[in-house]
Length: 130
Ligand code: HEM
Image 1 (cartoon, protein in one colour):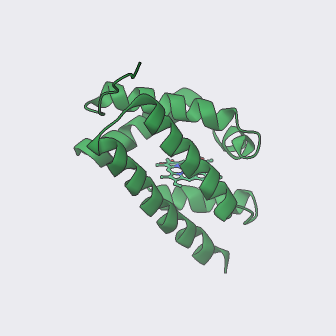
Image 2 (spheres, protein in one colour):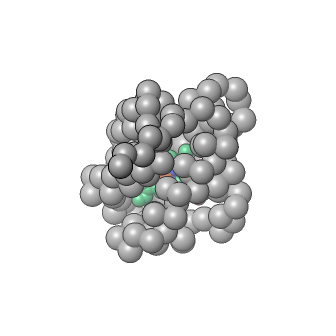
Image 3 (tube, rainbow, N blue to C red):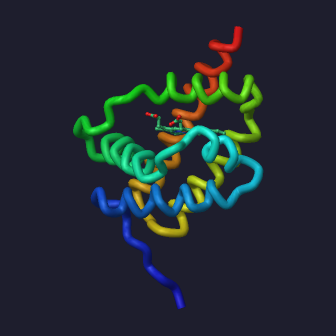
């Protein structure tokens, strides 16, 4: 029997995606401490990330912060130890969550956008270290 998944079509879908993704992140002992140490209000974080990905996919201007600056701050807190391994783990959870829940064009777009953004975040971290 095959199950058919639907594509991501609205904010509610994004909210489910973000929550399932962070459940996985928080269950991952290799990287969960980065998040648990920096994020004091999880509900606020999940709402913000829902705003971020909703805007990324459907437009609008709900998300108003600066993700590069946010990660430079995280990297400084952990004294520059975030590297390709952490980005690889993050991106694997992202792709697996997307594939587990949805199927379609927007799934592929969100995989691509996260990969691309990962390289910009890493470059910003790297530059800030010198
Ligand atoms: C690979 C692509 C990644 C994307 C697209 C991404 C995306 C984001 C976004 C949009 C935020 C919200 C920023 C804000 O406005 O506060 C955020 C926060 C955060 N990210 Fe990432 N992230 C990525 C990778 C990582 C990695 C590899 C780590 C650590 C190992 C990480 C750790 C964090 C933490 C700790 C916060 C919360 C910062 C705070 O609120 O103090 N991220 N991320």
